[in-house]
Amino acid sequence: FRTIIEPFRIHSVEPLRMTTRAERREHLGAAAYNLFQLRAEHVLIDLLTDSGTGAMSRDQWAAIQHGDESYAGSPSFYVFVDAVRELFPFEHVIPVHQGRAAEKILFTALGGPGRIVPNNTHFDTTRANVEATGARAVDLVIAEGRDPLSEHPFKGNMDLEALDALLAEHAASVPCVMVTITNNSGGGQPVSLANLQGVREVCDRYDTPLFLDACRFAENAWFIHEREEGQGERDVADIVRDMAALADGMTMSAKKDPMGNIGGWLAMRDDDLAQACRTQLILTEGFPTYGGLAGRDLEALAQGLREVVQHDYLRYRIRSTAYLGEALQRIGVPVLRPIGGHAVYLDARGLAPHLDPLEYPGQSVAVALYEAGGIRSCEIGTVMFGRQPDGSEAPSSMDLVRLAIPRRTYTQSHIDYVIEVCARVAADAASLPGYRITAEPPSLRHFTAAFEPL
Ligand code: F0G
Image 1: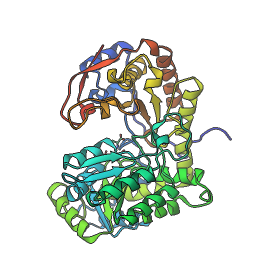
Image 2 (image 1 turned 45 degrees about the vertical axis):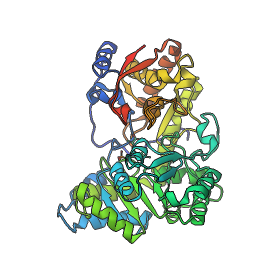
Image 3 (image 1 turned 45 degrees about the horizontal axis):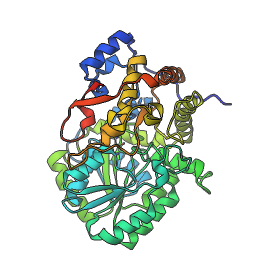
Image 4 (image 1 turned 60 degrees about the horizontal axis):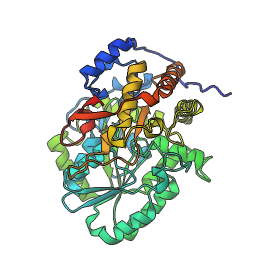
């Protein structure tokens, strides 16, 4: 059958609030055209992020009742560690309150002035945490990964030659190589097992550890299952274990594939590094058996990890994201190809070619989607990445608008509505205004910058 069936039924509902276009215009003004500054109850369909916004299952809510809130040695910690190790058998598993806390701790231990951290594409908080230590964050995704129209099945892959060249010159300054699965900032695109093996070989040549930024590991593994030769008959959990076996450690935001509303972890094989990280953890997150989380959160994540590798769920997840992307493509809205795992990325430069990248076409499209239909999306382009560490501004390699799909949250009719709103905005795209920034903080400006239409 062609209908994508949600492999669950609804057990508890949250009301959505309708607003008029005039009200939304007012809310936009009050938010200085920054969608992060809107009140969520003024949003109808919230596609700002798939992070922490998913619906937990009945079994996750039940697991919460098992939460043990002991300060040290809680049984919930061991349930959590066992569930993580079932997929990622690292010696040390250190819970943290979310992914960026893992990044902060890891790069406090490994970063510093003169250091260089390569990645396929750093997520914004990862880049900021690397740069905050004085180190340099370098993106080395394959050339196809920067081309919105390339149909390469694994556009998240690392450019192995570029990685080898960087390490040949600078290995002594590279504390670790990172690979982000899936490559969020590059369009939610997967990395193949073969490419990860290639990265491992390059790392071995220079004796450099490899860390995964594994937020969307299950979606990445499903793409491997669907697209990589010889993987189609395998259990996704086995593919995940293969990815883990190639790495020396990982940072994790459990707000994505582990189906949590909050949480994360840092894991590794190396004892000395783990000790340095745990010391740092105690300063900023908490004791190593809870790391900034409640025992009940640890239980919910353990159950979420069991659910996310189920094939029925992943088939629905990836197909339903593609449903949105393919419908937009059919009505002529330019989207990043192939459709990613957790999100559809509109190509705002393609949609509004009359706008210069420094007039923020992504911001313009995102504001228009909210004004037209109450949809909140996220600019991933020159607003997010344009400000350089030296203070200058440069266009980002792409100007995208991300429609991120929360897990198990919206139904097909919600998505059909999103398609209609996008069609209306696209029909009027030639009249979209550019924007200028009237105030911005020194880093991570997209969260708080104030804008004005030109
Ligand atoms: N790495 C990647 C690839 C991410 O996508 C995120 C978060 C993080 C690290 C940081 O994790 O939010 O738990 O601290 N991405 C969210 C997003 C915010 O909307 O894509 P966090």
